[in-house]
Image (cartoon, rainbow, N blue to C red; front, side, top):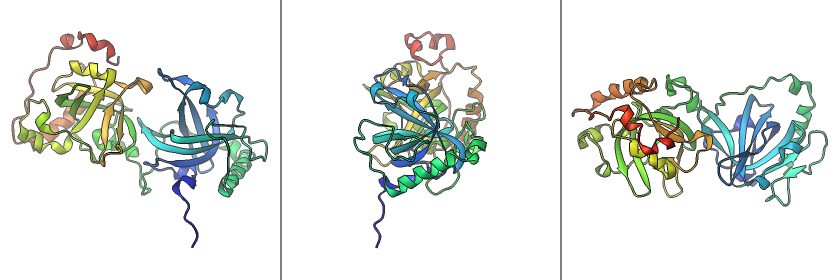
Length: 353
């Protein structure tokens, strides 16, 4: 009986990528790349744009590392061939992309030779051992690059939709999953595991801890994945426990850490908040998704309190009003502070503008 290849040995084409792929190997054409960019921390990142014959879409790929460990893209002759090992598929805003993960490696091969010796490689990759499948893939891509087919192909930038593990249409591709008021915000119902996303929601309960704050949010849609929820008894709210129980399935608990936690000081029950670059993931010690806003400002990560006249509020309020009928008890919120009082708080400087 032939030995079944390990998942870490399988090489996928770009069209075979799926939501939830957490350790995938790809050999593709490096169509273009960006110089290293600072992440406002110790690391930098470079962005690759990948193509292959199986899809007309350009697939973004991000590598994060200390500057000296990143590929020197200025030395590459584009297009080149890149071999990526142990990368994952992540969602950000309305698109999917590849991102490095623990134990990843990369290596570059010229399109102009038939050699399988890499022109450049990650420092962890002291020795490159290519399988027969990988050599065949590199040879096929070289032939494609030298053909008229490559020169005639018009590659598409923009939203990239990747199917789920079962091959069905990506949740992010369904237009009804998007808020109609903004192109880059998802509804709670569109959230999936291993996703970075933006959200506008109303806060209906708060739990303040020593190192973080939990904001229980609602936008009128119901999560389609199981998410971690705090015990309602520990949440500060103006609703009865009966209301909290009746609408429990609509809630999304967002845990806010680090410098973003300062912004929660001006958030009140009933406030509408915009979150940027939230992360939905399943911790190793759990079996359900958690949604967090954590350290740093990469990709404009942060949150802001929306003024009462903001044009993104009516669409959320309309959906929330539609599910209020499910509550048999009173759904009455106390009046919020005036906008000028709320926005004059000292931590307003930490709020996204």
